[in-house]
Length: 161
Image (cartoon, rainbow, N blue to C red; front, side, top):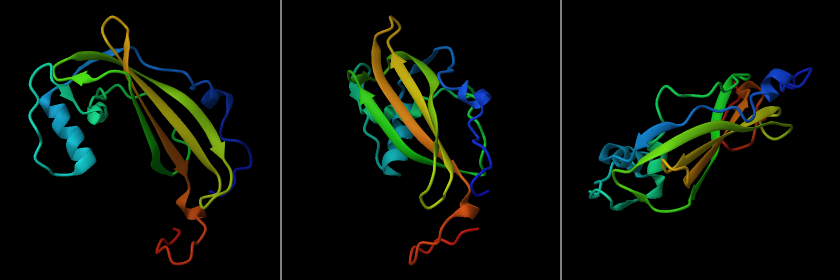
């Protein structure tokens, strides 16, 4: 797929912006800390955290509730996560239970660049205390594109499909 004849951002796709799920409880556990450290650093010795002790903020990446995915539009054949942003409002503690809510924050078209036409989709995730005070925010942006439309970049070793 090169440049589409018309925008892929139909009214139905645009209507997804701002949609989200109901809050789900997640607990910061030793397993979540291990998963997040493995994702960030690879296989390393994981420190032990006592209940109530401050844990690294990147534990948020392991606190996404399973089976609670939002209806992300699937409009192009290839996908790539292009950015992550974490905003820690206050320290996170081992054993605490938080409410997590996800929503589709933004969907935009991108014209030009190596892959030509692509879509950028941002997901926003908010973590809060049971009383509602925000503890942290996590956002990531995924790009949907068509690798077969890739432009050759001399010397990069990547061949278009």
